[in-house]
Length: 133
Image 1: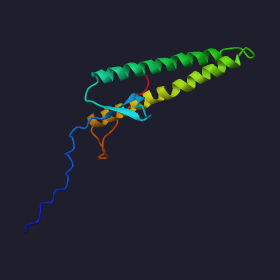
Image 2: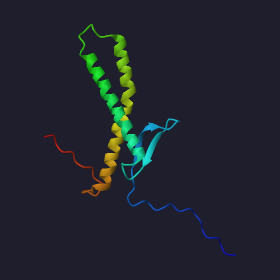
Image 3: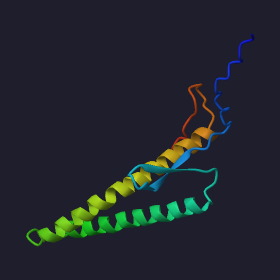
Image 4: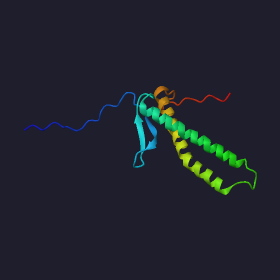
């Protein structure tokens, strides 16, 4: 009798240009992060995510303005209830704004790794920031 050929599952070949995942600005119903795999920024889900991120950043700007208003009050004029409400708004908005910033930083780093050759042989190089004028 001959032996049966070894039929171990083979891993699919690696994609030559892997597409980085985009973390979406919402979570699944069970609280897990959602990701989008796409090679373009023009899809429907990408546009919805962009709109949600824009709204989240705008909310951050509004809360920052509220905080500025509180800080401009003269001593003794600060309403404790208003201060607590503004801090609660900041606590609500800040995680979303941070997630937008982190997601965008990850996408920028991933895009630069795909496009920028490494000059030192250590992988891929990140673009250098231009100095302030």
